[in-house]
Length: 350
Ligand SMILES: [Zn+2]
Ligand SMILES: [Zn+2]
Image (cartoon, rainbow, N blue to C red):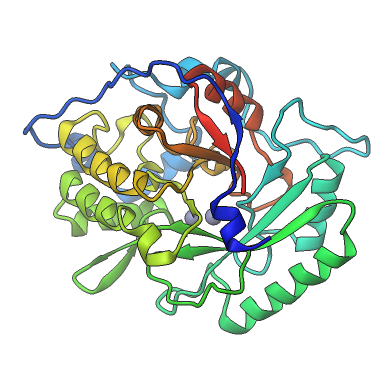
């Protein structure tokens, strides 16, 4: 499969599009942040809270939440797919997952162990998406040598498991990564950092790092969101992405509106601008369940309001687990498919 094939792939299912109300409004009022929470909680307080997951529930909102739609997901704990000797093929249409990390970056399992699990689950296609090299932060990503080893290993497995499952060798390219992605089967484009005054500040590495980012943006969520989404708006152009990774990663630690109000006009204005830019590229947006499987969120990226906005403008979506362990392949895809049906989303595949 060539990159061009990937980019011109047709929708797997073209569901009848429901009328999605434009729930967004714009005004000139600015973001409101949970200043009290920040003023009264110390980092250790918050770290303790986060350790005692799950995070707080969604506050009542005027917008449709995924929880409203995904009634099953509330009733089900966010546990991993149970390992078993008996093949347990999930009751879903999707048989693929293209956002999967291995021990070559910050994932837990070897590529081959993940392939075996994918075969056991009855998956037809599996895409690996190792983190691209970022020289300013090497902890979580593949080194240049490691990247070559990763590619060699995935290609070895492609041959070994051909006939059982189709494997793709992809890369999750960070906005600030300058690697050459020409030899990969596909690229997921993601923003994991915001550069503030020359310093690369992680968005999702940890709660403490996120709070630092917010502080460096003058404790102003509007400022932070504006910086983050201006990068997101450009992520396809910058990375050559075939898939738009976790669009609203900036909300990872904001369950329940803990740090800022996601319904505030200033925040909405920031993401709408990025969504409008990316919609023009025609690339699919991930519906990414990675933060659910790791206990940070109850709903996928992006939020229901963002999904509705993108869907109402003809955007496409692709389900991804952002797995860092073989136990979470296709995590909660059944719930996501229900969401897709209810909202009339256009799901696609590579
Ligand atoms: Zn990512
Ligand atoms: Zn990832």
